[in-house]
Image (cartoon, rainbow, N blue to C red; front, side, top):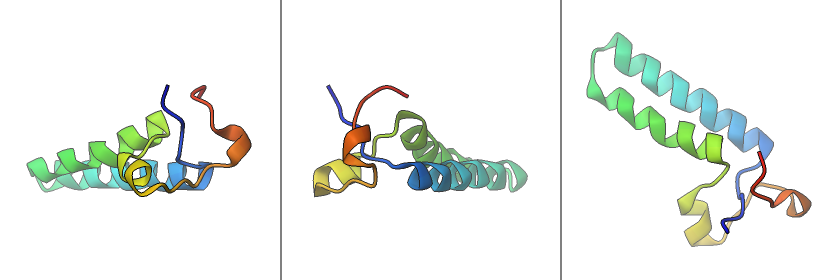
Length: 68
């Protein structure tokens, strides 16, 4: 079972950044907008593989559950 390591503020920031990148990719007609799906997915699943590999977490210890 994977533990969530993305907290609420981090989750909002990732969602906004992801949507902005996707929007910019659509406006500029560039495939680089697809990069926006990375932070958007990490916000949706509350899991960041980079944080996991570095042993970091922005979520509270009592909210480390996989329920969304």
